[in-house]
Length: 516
Image (cartoon, rainbow, N blue to C red):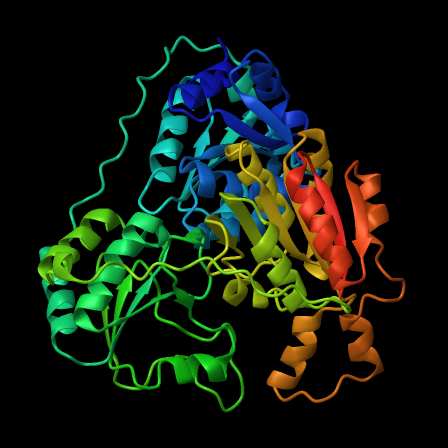
């Protein structure tokens, strides 16, 4: 077999059976090798940001990496924003980036560039396969890196001649699943002592700690010790809804976040980062914690988060704590008349099916969703983790491919949705069970707010032209139809609720343009 065949076989031997792709000429031998592998599902994205965002969504829900196939440096560069988000989410991804044949590099052809430097900032591991005989080894290096704890971004650069050349190397043995390191008992003891001290303490969690089983343990720890349990502001995946622990997130707005932590003296980080402002603002703090607050990490990268939580559970005697404070299902009264973000959130609380996956890139308009859905049907909540907009529609594609038996609902701001609108075509082509809700206010609403927050004043003509999307107005029903997705517009709360209920009962992609 040639190097491309060896790469395919190595990926499959290590349970990587999904390849999100936007290939070019230098990758054609890998494309041909994929064509010989019916076990590998290949999904085309019409823009590389769709490819990398879908790989992120797949990894978050499948708990294993997908591969991406990208065309040289510019193709990788087009996908970097969503690799940034994936990195922040702790998502494992193996990028395969084609490069020219080694003999062609000397000619400095138009697409020649420094792929290593482009890949570095968004990758935990970067390596090159320069010959067919090294392809299997480099692929295993990439897979090993991607499977780190938390998940990592690995980028393997595949030269065209390494792909097309024959190799005598056999298929490497599948890699054993990595065993995370045991947590440091010193950190466990320090966290337990802090919790027993009686000082006002917040347990701040993210990552695997936000799965339902771990949340129950952390909730019992908090109940036992009088601590407050919270999630960090943006999280890759959170399990919530009826029958699960109700957890608040750190507020996005600086003043609210500062008030949230005003009496806090200690913070125990369970995979989370110290809460800081998304941006700097004149006259406002960067850290949300009071000066002098003590910060402790329960575990660090590479250590087993489940074992760390279990050890802390035992150390504080949380088994004797009252039962976890599980959220109770409720049905808010459905409003009528004008369509508002609050009405959308209430409709979702009423109509989203059990085990739905919510992909949230609603930015400012969807903030009501969280407080309105504590008692909704159990669901997984996936967020924009790195702040690089354009993730919502691709994230939903990957999540739907990872969990084809579950309804995926996207909360999508209209401005950020235009970054990767091509993902709707992938929704249609793959017949994905995705309901897309477009929050159509025809402006970058969050930036209008930020203009005021940074003290820059009221927008004039130039600022307004940079922040409004109403000239011409976006028509998402027509945009969706052009991509092969059925769509309808809702202008009232009643109309939206009816459309959502219908969309949740049916299979396949559907888009609702919510005029707010």
